[in-house]
Image (cartoon, each protein chain N blue to C red):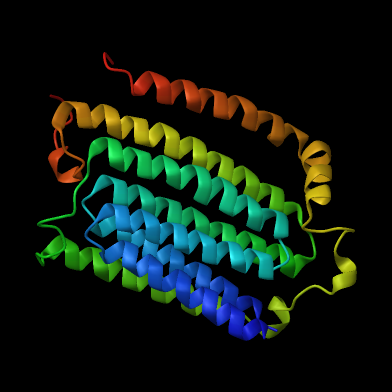
Length: 100
Length: 169
């Protein structure tokens, strides 16, 4: 039987990798994918705790997290498309100024 | 047996997450993330959340990542040429912070006392925990408000996406 702490440690490792991706990468789409990785790690922790407590309410909470992630991905990617039309670049280094 | 499965899926998830982090081609990054999502779905199934495991593959891997890949195709993002090859102070700070945060989180998780992290006995779970029927009872019973709010959320997201991606924004 795998202990609960191992699942939580795996969730922490995935969360850290997502954070490293957000901090270190300059391609905006990779940053976005790292955010999805962080959300996934949080989902893993939620499901692990559901098994720990014997209460599966957090399964539906995970479903809502997935719905919010989908909505965020849709709007965020359309923001990327709108930005790309102006600047022809997805690198976040090229978007330094607050006005054009 | 569960240990073998956990190590397999856990290592797969971490390995492909690292591939996504350090890969130069964003399309390969998206495909690696799909593998990570599949491994995490397998871990969900191991924890008894079968409905969520299938939803993960269908919603996350099938819809969200497809959205990513479509946008990658639309914006014609090519493989990186200059990224991740220069070592700078900000990069070192980023790596240092991520490593410190990772160490703290993992040590916190692994150091929890054993009595606090025992699994609940099977008798404590509600009938049909983790199945579609139980999720339906939760969604239309206890969490009806949240469920109804997801509808307008998705509508607003759809409207926002259409408005933002128009030509004359």
